[in-house]
Image (cartoon, rainbow, N blue to C red; front, side, top):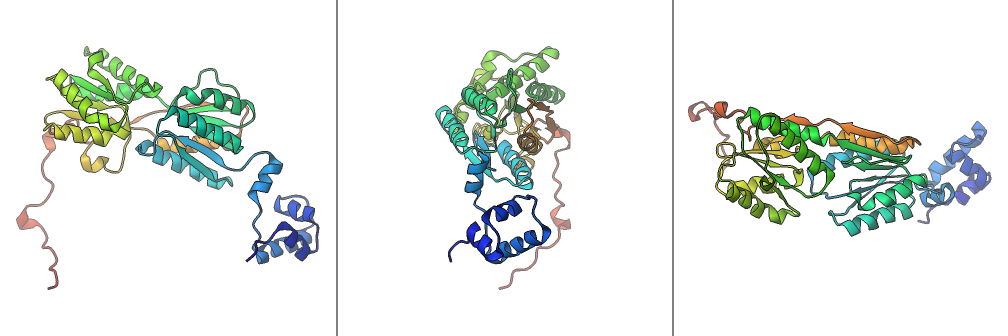
Length: 349
Protein backbone atom coordinates (compact mmCIF):
# COMPACT_ATOMS: atom_id res chain seq x y z
CA UNK A 1 0.00 0.00 0.00
CA UNK A 2 1.11 3.55 -0.71
CA UNK A 3 2.37 5.40 2.36
CA UNK A 4 0.02 8.21 3.43
CA UNK A 5 1.39 11.74 3.15
CA UNK A 6 0.70 14.88 5.10
CA UNK A 7 -1.22 16.09 2.04
CA UNK A 8 -3.52 13.05 2.28
CA UNK A 9 -4.20 13.87 5.94
CA UNK A 10 -4.93 17.51 5.12
CA UNK A 11 -7.33 16.58 2.30
CA UNK A 12 -9.20 14.01 4.41
CA UNK A 13 -9.48 16.38 7.37
CA UNK A 14 -10.48 19.37 5.20
CA UNK A 15 -7.65 21.58 6.44
CA UNK A 16 -4.37 22.92 5.08
CA UNK A 17 -1.04 21.13 5.28
CA UNK A 18 0.18 23.93 7.56
CA UNK A 19 -2.66 23.21 9.99
CA UNK A 20 -1.80 19.50 10.07
CA UNK A 21 1.81 20.42 10.75
CA UNK A 22 0.79 22.67 13.65
CA UNK A 23 -1.34 19.90 15.14
CA UNK A 24 1.45 17.32 14.88
CA UNK A 25 3.93 19.71 16.49
CA UNK A 26 1.66 20.83 19.32
CA UNK A 27 0.84 24.23 17.87
CA UNK A 28 -2.12 26.44 18.70
CA UNK A 29 -5.12 24.93 16.86
CA UNK A 30 -8.82 24.80 17.77
CA UNK A 31 -9.65 21.68 19.76
CA UNK A 32 -12.27 20.46 17.28
CA UNK A 33 -9.86 20.86 14.38
CA UNK A 34 -7.06 19.09 16.23
CA UNK A 35 -9.36 16.18 17.10
CA UNK A 36 -10.41 15.84 13.47
CA UNK A 37 -6.78 15.85 12.29
CA UNK A 38 -5.72 13.22 14.85
CA UNK A 39 -8.63 11.00 13.86
CA UNK A 40 -7.50 11.11 10.22
CA UNK A 41 -3.86 10.55 11.22
CA UNK A 42 -4.90 7.39 13.06
CA UNK A 43 -7.21 6.14 10.32
CA UNK A 44 -4.65 6.68 7.54
CA UNK A 45 -1.80 5.38 9.74
CA UNK A 46 0.16 8.45 8.84
CA UNK A 47 3.77 8.56 10.10
CA UNK A 48 5.51 11.95 10.07
CA UNK A 49 8.69 12.07 8.02
CA UNK A 50 11.52 12.45 10.54
CA UNK A 51 13.94 13.35 7.76
CA UNK A 52 11.76 16.27 6.68
CA UNK A 53 11.40 17.42 10.30
CA UNK A 54 15.18 17.26 10.68
CA UNK A 55 15.70 19.41 7.60
CA UNK A 56 13.44 22.14 8.98
CA UNK A 57 14.86 21.83 12.50
CA UNK A 58 18.46 21.75 11.27
CA UNK A 59 19.13 18.70 13.46
CA UNK A 60 17.87 15.13 13.82
CA UNK A 61 16.33 13.65 16.97
CA UNK A 62 18.92 10.84 17.02
CA UNK A 63 21.61 10.57 19.68
CA UNK A 64 24.90 9.22 18.36
CA UNK A 65 27.17 6.96 20.41
CA UNK A 66 30.67 6.06 19.23
CA UNK A 67 31.89 3.11 21.32
CA UNK A 68 35.44 1.77 21.58
CA UNK A 69 34.83 -1.95 21.73
CA UNK A 70 31.50 -3.78 22.08
CA UNK A 71 33.30 -6.83 23.50
CA UNK A 72 33.89 -4.98 26.78
CA UNK A 73 31.25 -5.60 29.50
CA UNK A 74 31.49 -1.95 30.53
CA UNK A 75 29.78 -0.74 27.36
CA UNK A 76 26.71 -2.98 27.49
CA UNK A 77 25.19 -1.30 30.55
CA UNK A 78 26.47 2.09 29.37
CA UNK A 79 24.47 1.70 26.14
CA UNK A 80 21.40 0.52 28.06
CA UNK A 81 21.47 3.70 30.14
CA UNK A 82 21.86 5.91 27.07
CA UNK A 83 19.06 4.14 25.23
CA UNK A 84 16.57 4.36 28.11
CA UNK A 85 16.97 8.12 28.48
CA UNK A 86 16.85 8.61 24.71
CA UNK A 87 13.62 6.60 24.39
CA UNK A 88 12.01 8.57 27.20
CA UNK A 89 12.81 11.78 25.35
CA UNK A 90 11.66 10.86 21.85
CA UNK A 91 15.06 9.90 20.46
CA UNK A 92 16.63 6.86 18.87
CA UNK A 93 20.29 5.97 19.41
CA UNK A 94 22.76 5.20 16.65
CA UNK A 95 25.62 3.07 17.98
CA UNK A 96 28.95 2.59 16.25
CA UNK A 97 31.93 0.53 17.41
CA UNK A 98 35.41 1.68 16.37
CA UNK A 99 37.33 -1.34 17.75
CA UNK A 100 39.90 1.15 19.06
CA UNK A 101 41.10 2.15 15.60
CA UNK A 102 42.00 5.84 15.62
CA UNK A 103 41.16 6.47 11.97
CA UNK A 104 37.77 4.79 12.40
CA UNK A 105 37.08 6.88 15.51
CA UNK A 106 37.58 10.10 13.57
CA UNK A 107 35.52 8.86 10.62
CA UNK A 108 32.58 7.80 12.80
CA UNK A 109 32.48 11.08 14.71
CA UNK A 110 32.58 12.91 11.38
CA UNK A 111 29.64 10.82 10.14
CA UNK A 112 27.63 11.60 13.27
CA UNK A 113 28.25 15.31 12.71
CA UNK A 114 27.17 15.03 9.07
CA UNK A 115 23.95 13.34 10.25
CA UNK A 116 23.35 16.38 12.50
CA UNK A 117 22.71 14.21 15.55
CA UNK A 118 20.91 15.67 18.54
CA UNK A 119 23.99 14.95 20.64
CA UNK A 120 27.01 12.68 20.72
CA UNK A 121 28.44 10.29 23.32
CA UNK A 122 32.00 9.13 22.65
CA UNK A 123 34.32 6.74 24.47
CA UNK A 124 37.21 7.26 22.08
CA UNK A 125 40.74 8.42 22.74
CA UNK A 126 41.96 11.96 22.25
CA UNK A 127 42.04 11.58 18.45
CA UNK A 128 38.48 12.92 18.21
CA UNK A 129 38.82 15.79 20.69
CA UNK A 130 39.25 18.52 18.08
CA UNK A 131 36.11 17.35 16.27
CA UNK A 132 33.95 17.10 19.40
CA UNK A 133 35.09 20.55 20.48
CA UNK A 134 33.98 21.99 17.12
CA UNK A 135 30.67 20.14 17.32
CA UNK A 136 30.04 21.51 20.82
CA UNK A 137 30.94 25.01 19.66
CA UNK A 138 28.42 24.58 16.84
CA UNK A 139 25.60 23.77 19.27
CA UNK A 140 25.73 19.93 19.44
CA UNK A 141 26.14 18.69 23.03
CA UNK A 142 28.92 16.10 23.27
CA UNK A 143 29.82 13.84 26.19
CA UNK A 144 33.22 12.17 26.61
CA UNK A 145 32.92 8.96 28.64
CA UNK A 146 35.69 7.35 30.75
CA UNK A 147 37.98 10.36 30.92
CA UNK A 148 37.85 14.03 31.81
CA UNK A 149 38.25 16.88 29.32
CA UNK A 150 40.82 19.66 29.92
CA UNK A 151 39.48 23.20 29.52
CA UNK A 152 36.15 22.13 28.02
CA UNK A 153 34.09 24.63 26.02
CA UNK A 154 30.32 24.99 26.60
CA UNK A 155 28.29 21.87 25.72
CA UNK A 156 31.34 19.58 25.93
CA UNK A 157 30.85 17.34 28.96
CA UNK A 158 32.61 14.37 30.52
CA UNK A 159 31.39 11.38 32.54
CA UNK A 160 34.21 9.44 34.12
CA UNK A 161 35.20 7.05 36.89
CA UNK A 162 37.59 8.08 39.65
CA UNK A 163 40.34 5.90 38.18
CA UNK A 164 42.89 6.69 40.88
CA UNK A 165 40.38 5.62 43.53
CA UNK A 166 39.80 2.38 41.59
CA UNK A 167 43.54 1.59 41.62
CA UNK A 168 43.84 2.47 45.30
CA UNK A 169 40.87 0.20 46.06
CA UNK A 170 42.63 -2.65 44.27
CA UNK A 171 45.81 -2.16 46.29
CA UNK A 172 43.93 -1.97 49.57
CA UNK A 173 42.03 -5.17 48.90
CA UNK A 174 45.05 -7.16 47.70
CA UNK A 175 47.01 -6.14 50.78
CA UNK A 176 44.10 -7.16 53.04
CA UNK A 177 44.23 -10.61 51.40
CA UNK A 178 47.92 -10.97 52.14
CA UNK A 179 49.12 -10.30 48.58
CA UNK A 180 52.45 -8.49 48.35
CA UNK A 181 54.00 -9.03 44.90
CA UNK A 182 51.66 -7.70 42.24
CA UNK A 183 51.77 -7.93 38.46
CA UNK A 184 49.59 -5.82 36.15
CA UNK A 185 48.06 -6.32 32.70
CA UNK A 186 47.18 -2.93 31.20
CA UNK A 187 45.54 -2.06 27.89
CA UNK A 188 47.81 0.76 26.83
CA UNK A 189 48.06 4.52 26.96
CA UNK A 190 44.49 5.51 27.85
CA UNK A 191 44.11 8.01 30.71
CA UNK A 192 41.97 5.45 32.55
CA UNK A 193 44.89 3.00 32.60
CA UNK A 194 47.35 5.62 33.80
CA UNK A 195 44.98 6.67 36.59
CA UNK A 196 44.42 3.10 37.78
CA UNK A 197 48.14 2.35 37.79
CA UNK A 198 48.79 5.57 39.70
CA UNK A 199 46.21 4.65 42.33
CA UNK A 200 47.45 1.07 42.60
CA UNK A 201 51.05 2.19 42.98
CA UNK A 202 50.12 4.83 45.58
CA UNK A 203 48.14 2.30 47.61
CA UNK A 204 51.03 -0.15 47.60
CA UNK A 205 53.50 2.60 48.49
CA UNK A 206 51.34 3.52 51.47
CA UNK A 207 51.84 -0.04 52.77
CA UNK A 208 55.59 -0.02 52.11
CA UNK A 209 55.25 -2.12 48.96
CA UNK A 210 56.23 -1.30 45.39
CA UNK A 211 54.99 -1.76 41.85
CA UNK A 212 58.10 -1.77 39.64
CA UNK A 213 57.81 -0.69 36.02
CA UNK A 214 58.69 -4.20 34.86
CA UNK A 215 55.67 -5.55 36.75
CA UNK A 216 53.33 -3.69 34.35
CA UNK A 217 52.77 -5.07 30.83
CA UNK A 218 50.75 -3.25 28.17
CA UNK A 219 48.65 -5.42 25.87
CA UNK A 220 47.11 -4.15 22.62
CA UNK A 221 44.88 -7.13 21.73
CA UNK A 222 43.43 -10.21 23.41
CA UNK A 223 45.72 -12.42 21.35
CA UNK A 224 48.69 -10.95 23.23
CA UNK A 225 47.33 -11.66 26.71
CA UNK A 226 48.67 -15.20 27.07
CA UNK A 227 52.21 -14.19 26.17
CA UNK A 228 52.04 -11.15 28.48
CA UNK A 229 50.91 -13.26 31.45
CA UNK A 230 53.64 -15.80 30.79
CA UNK A 231 56.26 -13.03 30.57
CA UNK A 232 55.17 -11.58 33.92
CA UNK A 233 55.34 -14.97 35.60
CA UNK A 234 58.78 -15.64 34.13
CA UNK A 235 60.01 -12.22 35.17
CA UNK A 236 58.87 -12.62 38.77
CA UNK A 237 58.86 -16.15 40.12
CA UNK A 238 57.38 -14.90 43.40
CA UNK A 239 54.34 -13.10 41.93
CA UNK A 240 51.35 -13.75 44.19
CA UNK A 241 48.64 -11.63 42.52
CA UNK A 242 47.76 -10.42 39.04
CA UNK A 243 45.64 -7.35 38.31
CA UNK A 244 43.84 -6.78 35.00
CA UNK A 245 43.05 -3.10 34.47
CA UNK A 246 40.46 -3.56 31.72
CA UNK A 247 37.33 -5.70 31.69
CA UNK A 248 37.71 -6.76 28.08
CA UNK A 249 40.78 -8.86 29.00
CA UNK A 250 39.39 -10.45 32.17
CA UNK A 251 38.46 -13.83 30.73
CA UNK A 252 41.64 -13.98 28.62
CA UNK A 253 43.85 -13.35 31.67
CA UNK A 254 41.87 -15.86 33.75
CA UNK A 255 42.32 -18.47 31.01
CA UNK A 256 46.03 -17.68 30.63
CA UNK A 257 46.62 -18.31 34.34
CA UNK A 258 44.83 -21.64 34.05
CA UNK A 259 46.94 -22.53 30.99
CA UNK A 260 50.04 -21.86 33.08
CA UNK A 261 48.82 -24.44 35.58
CA UNK A 262 48.04 -21.92 38.32
CA UNK A 263 45.02 -22.31 40.58
CA UNK A 264 43.13 -19.17 41.60
CA UNK A 265 43.44 -18.13 44.44
CA UNK A 266 45.65 -20.87 45.94
CA UNK A 267 48.63 -20.28 43.63
CA UNK A 268 47.91 -16.68 42.64
CA UNK A 269 45.32 -14.02 43.38
CA UNK A 270 43.41 -12.37 40.54
CA UNK A 271 41.53 -9.06 40.50
CA UNK A 272 40.03 -7.28 37.50
CA UNK A 273 37.96 -4.29 36.35
CA UNK A 274 34.26 -4.30 35.45
CA UNK A 275 31.73 -6.89 36.50
CA UNK A 276 30.20 -9.27 33.99
CA UNK A 277 27.74 -12.16 33.85
CA UNK A 278 30.32 -14.91 34.39
CA UNK A 279 32.06 -13.06 37.23
CA UNK A 280 30.07 -14.73 40.05
CA UNK A 281 30.44 -18.20 38.54
CA UNK A 282 34.21 -17.79 38.20
CA UNK A 283 34.50 -16.18 41.62
CA UNK A 284 36.37 -13.16 40.22
CA UNK A 285 36.69 -10.13 42.47
CA UNK A 286 36.29 -6.93 40.46
CA UNK A 287 36.25 -3.18 40.81
CA UNK A 288 32.98 -2.25 39.12
CA UNK A 289 32.01 0.94 37.37
CA UNK A 290 28.40 2.19 37.54
CA UNK A 291 28.23 2.11 33.74
CA UNK A 292 24.43 2.10 33.55
CA UNK A 293 24.20 5.27 35.65
CA UNK A 294 27.05 6.79 33.65
CA UNK A 295 25.16 6.10 30.43
CA UNK A 296 22.00 7.67 31.80
CA UNK A 297 23.81 10.81 32.94
CA UNK A 298 25.57 11.13 29.58
CA UNK A 299 22.24 11.01 27.74
CA UNK A 300 20.63 13.41 30.23
CA UNK A 301 23.38 15.95 29.57
CA UNK A 302 22.53 15.75 25.86
CA UNK A 303 18.78 16.02 26.39
CA UNK A 304 19.25 18.92 28.80
CA UNK A 305 21.50 20.73 26.28
CA UNK A 306 22.95 23.07 28.88
CA UNK A 307 25.32 25.81 27.77
CA UNK A 308 27.51 24.97 30.76
CA UNK A 309 30.13 22.23 30.70
CA UNK A 310 29.60 19.44 33.23
CA UNK A 311 32.47 17.24 34.43
CA UNK A 312 30.99 14.31 36.37
CA UNK A 313 33.05 11.76 38.31
CA UNK A 314 31.64 8.47 39.62
CA UNK A 315 33.01 6.34 42.43
CA UNK A 316 34.08 2.71 41.85
CA UNK A 317 32.73 -0.22 43.86
CA UNK A 318 34.63 -3.30 45.02
CA UNK A 319 32.71 -6.54 44.37
CA UNK A 320 34.36 -9.14 46.59
CA UNK A 321 34.31 -12.81 45.61
CA UNK A 322 37.04 -15.43 46.10
CA UNK A 323 39.74 -14.88 43.47
CA UNK A 324 42.11 -13.03 45.80
CA UNK A 325 41.79 -15.54 48.63
CA UNK A 326 39.16 -13.53 50.49
CA UNK A 327 37.33 -16.62 51.69
CA UNK A 328 40.10 -19.20 51.39
CA UNK A 329 39.55 -20.33 54.97
CA UNK A 330 35.90 -21.06 54.22
CA UNK A 331 36.15 -22.63 50.77
CA UNK A 332 34.27 -25.85 51.39
CA UNK A 333 31.72 -27.54 49.20
CA UNK A 334 28.18 -26.37 49.78
CA UNK A 335 26.71 -29.38 48.04
CA UNK A 336 24.99 -31.83 50.41
CA UNK A 337 26.60 -35.26 50.69
CA UNK A 338 25.34 -37.89 48.31
CA UNK A 339 23.28 -39.54 51.07
CA UNK A 340 21.36 -36.30 51.66
CA UNK A 341 20.91 -35.11 48.10
CA UNK A 342 17.40 -35.28 46.66
CA UNK A 343 16.86 -38.06 44.16
CA UNK A 344 16.91 -37.09 40.50
CA UNK A 345 13.65 -37.53 38.63
CA UNK A 346 13.54 -40.74 36.66
CA UNK A 347 13.84 -40.59 32.89
CA UNK A 348 11.00 -42.23 30.94
CA UNK A 349 12.19 -45.19 28.90
